[in-house]
Image (cartoon, rainbow, N blue to C red; front, side, top):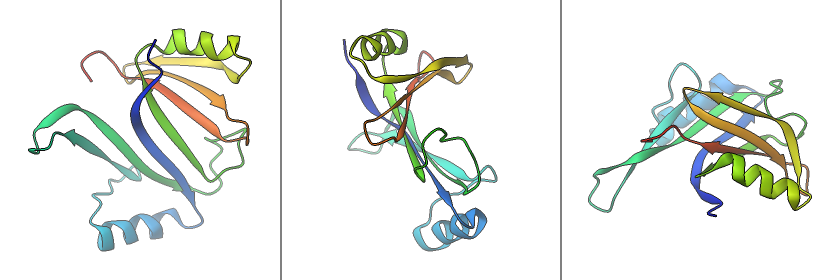
Length: 128
């Protein structure tokens, strides 16, 4: 079974999210949208789309989306078979949070690494 196949997103908190979003937009040219981030489309060496995206997002410091982690960041990893990976991680004694979300955006689960960082696992919808 494949485990992680790529990075689906990078999420981090800021003391002043709008200010930081504006800085990245102005100085690094990141197309920050009203929701606080952007999606970078995947391309091949010639610049042709390859059917995936990586999300980048800055959120407010007080947001509890990364709980129970106290870290200011969370990485979202793409996976092929979320349910199989979650079962394997549980068998291996990992701290898997007791929740799997399924929506039109795909399937999501979370595991806490040995340093207390919340890691998001994402199985994109078919075709993404």
